Length: 231
Image (tube, rainbow, N blue to C red; front, side, top):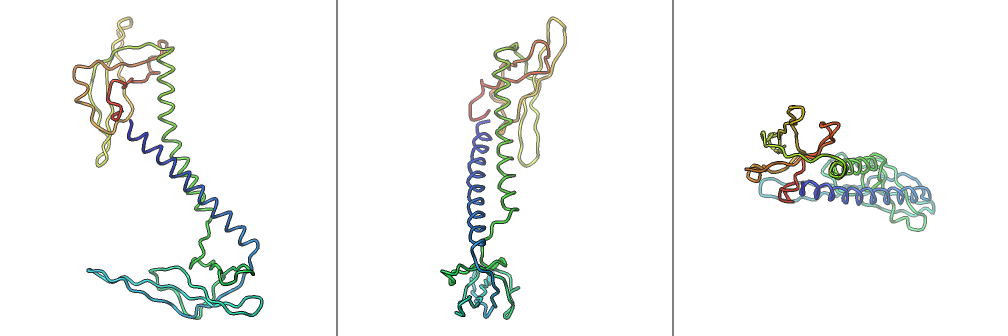
């Protein structure tokens, strides 16, 4: 499963990067708020821009907020662009500013101050856990294969069928059979998921399976004979 492993590794890298950025911004925001002066600003006007397209026009709005610092000086701060028209002139909204740089005030009402909330951190953490889970399953399977190659029994099974799962995004599992000559017991083995149909590589092939002699249900289907990108 080369592609899923690559996708899983990419997801881990992206999740770590995203979570690191979230933690950094969250820490920076908390440090800023701990030292900042909190006050209220008044929306004095709304900047409207129009982006013209062939099918329709898109309107964007930016609130201009005016506030007075502790020294009595008046400053204005422009919020971020929004497609919503919920801004009301005359409305008061909370903001925070550094006494040294009051002109760089940050709006804390979702109109321009990028505050990283605990929810965002949780999303980043959950994404990382999900990525580790995906790669962890692959790691455990390889670890189990290594264990059974060393301590288990290798048998050659015969292709039974190819199980197709999913509708839009299909995946495939190889089902193979093996008969234990000593007990005359038939076993059906199922491989891990494959992203492509392996049928063309299975014609006339015996499919190796590594299993625990004392428990044939403890097994791993060895697909190392398939192209690396396929498995």
